[in-house]
Every structure is written in C-alpha cells, then in structure tokens.
Image 1 (cartoon, one colour):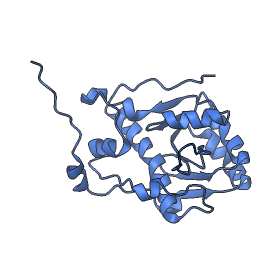
Image 2 (cartoon, helix red, strand yellow):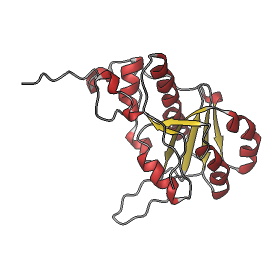
Image 3 (cartoon, rainbow, N blue to C red):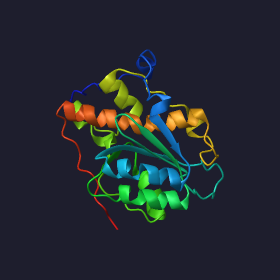
Length: 210
C-alpha cells in the first residue's frame, strides 16, 4: 500500500480566508488601443527581458461558433502592465515580441493561447507555461494562477467568472476588465521570480515551432 503525499495546496475555503492579492496601481496599467501608442512604447517593450503574459477572447457560447480572438493581449513587467486591444496592426507590432528568442514570456495554461496565435500566423518562442513548474512541491498536476499565488504568497487571487466570460471585444474595455487583464499578466511575473528565488528547477521554455 502506497502512502499518498498530501497536496501542499490550500483548499478553496482556506484561500477565501487569505488576504486579497494587491494588483498594480491604476497608474501602472496602460490601455493601448492604437498604433501610435504602440510606437511610443516600442523601445521599452522591445528591451524588456521578461514579460508575464495572457490573452483574452470574446467567449463563444453557441455550438459551431468560431473563436475570433485574441481580442486582448496583456503583457506585464514587475512594475507595469500593458493591455492591448487587438487590431491587425497592433498584432503585427506585437509579433516580434512573441517570436523573440531573447524575451521570455511566462504565463499559465498557454496551450489555447498558442493555438489562437498560430491561427494568426504567430509562433511562440521563449514562452514558459508555469502551470507545470510545481513538481518540486510534490504537485504533478497542472497548477492555476490562483493556487500558485496562494501557495507561494498566501494571498487570495480573485478570478471573477463574470469578468473572465465578459465581452473582450468591447471598445473600450471596462475598468473591471482592465484590472482583471492586468492581474492575469502581472501575477505570473511574481510567481516566476519567486520560483527562481526558491531555487526551483523550471521547465524549459517553448522554442519556436512551425
């Protein structure tokens, strides 16, 4: 008979009792809706060695409905989040970042993102899915951002279903959507840096595949 190692992850009830995650302040979050804004940010964006990353798409509810996202792409450093409302021109602007071999992009559950991006002709390079980075804790199943934040920082990372399933193609985004999107990119940066600080061996980053 084998002894099952108890998971170090807190329960949902325990997470609810933890202090709330502190997101970036509003002045540290920039909403980008046009190419002029992109051009003004080009130097700082293309120089950043590390981004937290996520994307949001308008949900599909009907059978056979084709997903047309991503409608929002968010990138974050340790002190700033960039929320892009996607147009073809903005997607072209961001492509070199996602295909860069020198800029690391970290996030959670990025398989679907990779699929959507490939449909747009973008092939991920140097992208690390942190959901499988917790084997050192005795966790063999994928970990989501909420559990990762609770485990590493003892905070409750809010994940509102009403916001996650809201219309991400609306223009402009609501303040609640902007805050949600920023947090989803900012948290992976904190988690990645904490895993490094703890000396955890991380999975290899995904390299570009055709």
